[in-house]
Image (cartoon, rainbow, N blue to C red; front, top):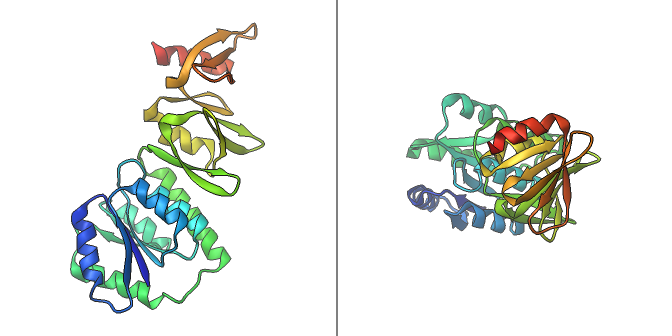
Amino acid sequence: MKVVIVDDEINSVNYISENLKRYEGVEVLKTFTDPVDALAFLIRNDCDLLFLDIEMPGISGLYIAEQVVLLKPKTKFCFISAYNEGALKAFELNALDYIQKPFDKERFDICIKRYLASENNNDSISEREQKTLALSDVNQAVDYSLNMICGYDDENIVIINIADIYYFEVINSVVYIHTKSNVYRANKPLSFYEEKLKEHYFFKTHKSYLVNLSKADHFSPRITYTYDMFFKDIEDVVPVSRSKVKELKEYFN
């Protein structure tokens, strides 16, 4: 069984690695303290069991888990968490195991034995869908900010720095991510990005647009009491709906 460990606390990584040495047939494929490096690795490589910290800088463990479930649905998870009992119960009810920090040897053993016992069990399609929905629900509810997100270039998944994004656009219910030179397809609704990127100066100018205001150059009024937003170094123009004009002015004031 191949295992990957992702935790920004090196002591946790070392503790798990040491404990895994007690089990035959378990190989620690890779360990990470940087979640961005971990996600880049997991996109391209398979593992059987992923130990994944939830609270990490840059990318939440929940966000990583969603991407892995979509790409590698057979991967099993053990979340490492310092969340309270209520949040942990949500993972337990949705068949996602966890170890609560600070964890002890007995709890770790229970987790390992559970996954070793289920090593040969493959999730059915409905179970995979349930797992994806469960992760999405909890992910939406937990408060955290992202510095990186995933997007799709055709069928290839790419990691995008938030600072490189100009705006999100919804076309026929599909969310697209616009950078200076590329357009990527997103895998989350616009409301998800609006919530997670609010600390990065993203503003919803219209029901179909979420804009990085740090990239804005100027706004031009129209006769309809709406505005057009122009960027500093791309030619795209984004609308500001009438209902958002006042809120936008207050934002800048």
